Length: 384
Ligand code: PLP
Image 1 (cartoon, rainbow, N blue to C red):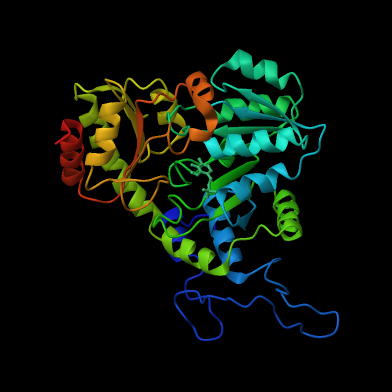
Image 2 (image 1 turned 135 degrees about the vertical axis):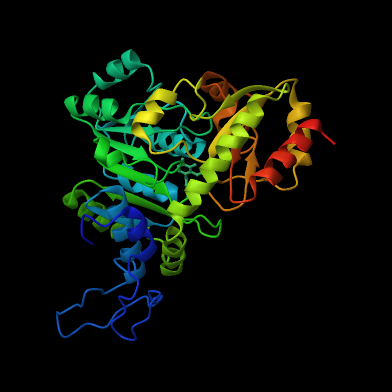
């Protein structure tokens, strides 16, 4: 792919008409677990499916091109992608992680740290002096998640990566909430970008998958080797589906974020809503930073309802166009209650420290007509 080709074109066409055997336009699905050697001691490009597969490679190449990285490794889930990078650390290494990242990421980090596979500092990354204090301990890796899940807090990727570099640490940014269509952390100094491809990249809620994109080719190669060692690769069919989903990423996310902005503005005006967390709102604390480091505000938002558990339960039970479910980034709009769903494992104390109240609801906005979504939210707030 040449550098001047626009990302929309890369996403829509990567691997199209590249099939040498039949001239297939849609890249063929290669399910074979093993590949014929060309001769004694002469493996072809592929030898065994755990080590490499054409569909995984095609997806990885497309993601690396979109993120501005040197290479990518496609994994069986977003958690496997994060764990692939964590697997590079030793017991003397320290990881700095944000206090408000995805609950599953915190669970993984705490579980690995409890087994002494590395040391862990959990820090509010928006607090510069707390970050500098943690960086003074010479960490090996700083994990960044922005916007954060589910509070949509924004942190400054360029600033944190620069500080981390001075301290001798590499940085890994979870770009799941925005995708490379709206944010490219490697161009802001990150060493790794991780994705739950389950979300916007695939976009159709029918694959669990992940990817790590590395800024440097040697890091991508090391992770590829490690992925073969531990067997964390995603299936060829999942990679094929994800590349198919990626074709429409730019069109989908543009429409989805336009709808999200309307819904955020609508929620803001409702008397039952005490707070709306959407970086596109002018009074969001991260608005100016989001304007600077993102190309859009995304299709995720969260909001808080007044009046105890009852209104929250009513909202979840009364939506019809939206569906009560975990996950995000699909064509269908979803509502999640972080305290009892995605962030339940954090425990009440952890959620309180992080600011995730029992009143908080998270929305992933899909491709339905905006009028239908607004009407659905309005009636669910009314509780009829
Ligand atoms: N990172 C973020 C920001 C997520 O929201 C999730 C899942 O919700 C993950 C990582 C984990 O991805 P997966 O569910 O594909 O393992």
